Image: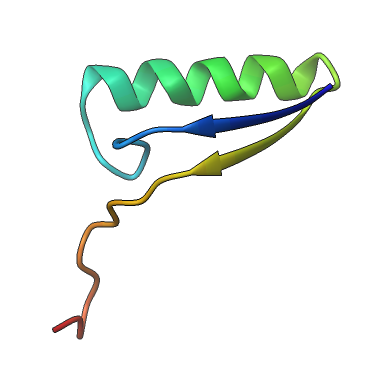
Length: 49
């Protein structure tokens, strides 16, 4: 199954929601599903304005 997950938080952010979603995605991929994660809010990286 192809699944799109839209979330405000996902690793590398460190919090309970990010960890739970990361484990959910990993489990679904292990079961053969294709996942796409859309995360509109990205943390500022090095050199970001």
